Length: 395
Ligand code: PLP
Image (cartoon, rainbow, N blue to C red; front, side, top):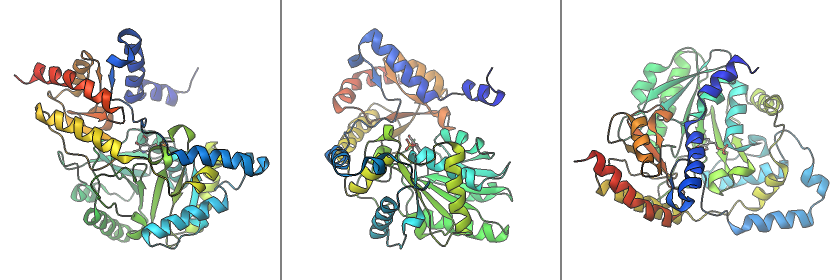
């Protein structure tokens, strides 16, 4: 009874979600404490206490019709203005509420961007390994996702390969900084290089190629590394931001899209984004959480918890013979599988109750992803299982 397009989507449904379900099944058999589920990026660090306080204050102090009512499709103007000022303070820009559209998480933001900019068969380029949901966001809005590999091992962007992949149909490049699944951060030199290349190619092809910087992990950074802000480097750029990871609120579905007034045809873009919220069917971002965010712009989660997890797991895996680039941000490790077949390797790991996602799910076979946003105690308990798994393959 369902459409052919949806049948295809059901067939290729997320491997990550499937692993998550498998974790629940194994927990029923072996007990949750004996299953080491590294499959899904669901933050284990608690949201800051300011979130609960803000919710209670808003419910106590504000008019119920304001809290729960419809508003402009872009979101409340005062909330958007507060976010714009926060961005200006951090990145030296002069945005106003007009440059911010509140969204249903990063997923909602990326979807309305693609709905606004894509014509049928337009191409969107991303770099592998990549967040697999990009395929849905692009194809649901009529586009075609084109994959360019990163430099294998370091997972840095390959701008030479990108240039070769750009065609007159290229409408946008989407990058994710810090990156899921590798944890790599693209620094200023590469961001500048990307902006210069796309300025050159846009002129050459007499078109506008957008950069979309997907940044749900922007605040999850270790070792004092600075992440460049794309609006400072390229006029036709969108930032897709989300509070799902930065404030551990993935179920609340709150984020925003930011862009600058320098963007080509910016007024049309704004109108397009607003119409897209309605045609996608979410209409506006959750009203209560828009107001909560405005009160919590200075709040943060305790990133040192993730850093401790990263260090424990990374150091152990390296010590027993795994190869992995040390992640600088987000909460994932992208590790080379001990055999070329990453799916077979994930199956082998399951024998030790280790749930991992094969790299193929990110367009990068031969690797696997671990989400270390789980408890330190759980990671400690899993170390023995990792050692046993490695011994099976390293003689
Ligand atoms: N982009 C990337 C790279 C992600 O990892 C995720 C979620 O895991 C999203 C977008 C979607 O984020 P949200 O839950 O805020 O929609």
